[in-house]
Image (cartoon, rainbow, N blue to C red; front, side, top):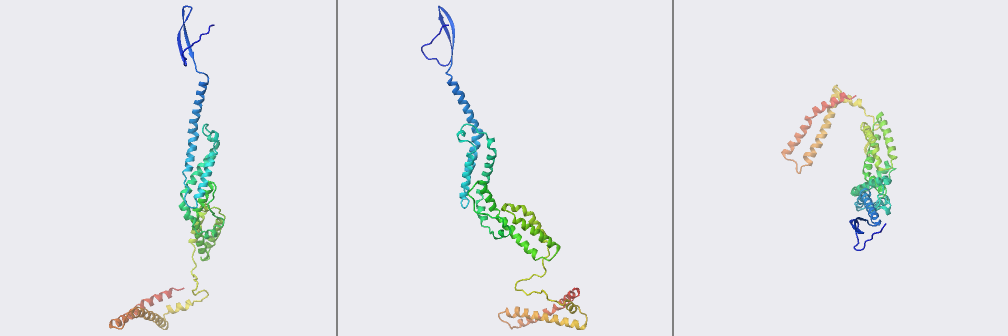
Length: 347
């Protein structure tokens, strides 16, 4: 076997054909020249890496960047929520970074299935933090709610300052503060229901309403978060409906007003006086009614015609006074008839 060598211009890779003069005879010759092994190996490795990089971007880096962009888009509001929102954002970013090893982040696609629950939690907390930040103005108004009645009827509920913690804890705090006006409304209704039950006439309905009211008050006392008040709304409406059917007490005592309690009113005597048919009774009744009408006519006429006038004493003033008195006696007949009817129907 003979060796053929080539000297001259360096041949590139490819196929070369020619003839070789061997002892006066032409011998066909084909030469195949290839690159060194490191060249194809390098190309193969480069293709693999490019494919991995594309897959990483499509399946992992892009969603990862989108989550980071969503977190960065949350703008801390002014006021009490500024620092808590900033801290919650920082913690969300740290949690997102921990879902992928840093030394593989730019190349190898990290399987999302290994952190599916964590990523779902980050997505949920990001959305809750965004909504909480957007309601900063409502938060400030709700924070000024008067909590004195709330402390009376819902002693288990306390709302402190905004926590500098995770996004979930901050979102829970904002939801609790936003529910304070609803708590105040519930507490106000409870106070009104308690007063209405206390002033109602004793009855079976009152006992039932009182029992349901006490059960509702106990349920409110067990609540721990303001948002839990929605669970007792139906019971509150039911107790309100029961109280609305109660009959209020007929005699309402007012501070400083005289009380009729214990005063025996002689209804039978008054009835006999008003409905009497005898001559003496009728005369006494007519005298009494005439006296009352006369007093009312004198007082009202004097106040309207004399006291209210700058001057008095003309002929027209005298005629007006006479007419006023005559008009008062004109209504005594119908008034007397009405009183007689009232007396005859009094039992």
